[in-house]
Image 1 (cartoon, rainbow, N blue to C red):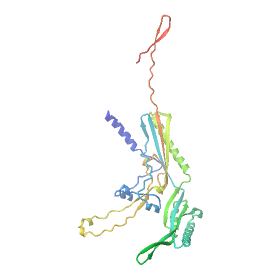
Image 2: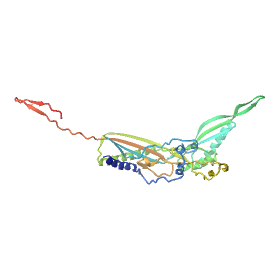
Image 3: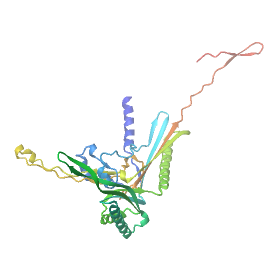
Image 4: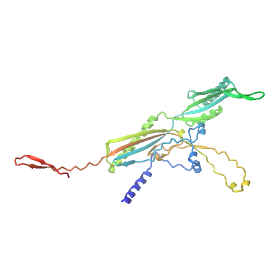
Length: 358
């Protein structure tokens, strides 16, 4: 009996693991690139995620991945008198508005000269932006700090030497915000900033003004898929009690700045030098390996429905999960009629006799 049960369970497991997501279009598996090559020699702790698509990512270490771990795409979970249906949906949406953030720091001997030099740099940056079609209304500045800097000068005495802290200049820091409509405009914005000697791109934010409309569209697709599954299960004999059910859903937005990964693609040199005698080994100066970064969208394995699967630029990913729990109808017990016995007296009176317990 145990062997028969085992043979029935295994095909069901294979069916669940081999289920594919419904994709609107053709999506091919990821190719083996340099990032895959680097993974072979990197520990999990070295597989870093950059916090943003700018210079800010250089200062980040081991950040936790924001990827929503939803498990494999599944159809249903039968459990005693319960039947749970879960549908995961994902939509890739191209942002319609972007904001690039630059940081600029200016040093000067006096407060006036520091502020004047900063204003000249910002004015040149704005002129360069106007040349590439960025309106002045899409440019804003954010004051961060304006503080004095201090240095040290020595105070020599006959038997001692002391250093005193004295004013040495001023430091002015601001953030510059540039709004643009097309992702391709970022190259021109970077060139405009470089011409004004602004090099620190902090991050790029992505925005979806019609996000609610996209969410409603994704929710409707998931509900239609759940309804289709309910009908298919009823065709094979599952009677779902629609009067007793529960529903739960969850929505998550995954922005591109949380999906940048870093790796180092390089190969170790030959070990022939290490085989020589210790006295003959030359001093080896290692080269500073560059860090490569790439955008990696959320994996499709955990989703049943994927809208716009093929992407050629970073996108905002909308994730939606709906869980329906039905309670199966229980078999009604068979009620057998009770046998009742009466005794009739000679006067015609009927008296019920006690029924023995069956």
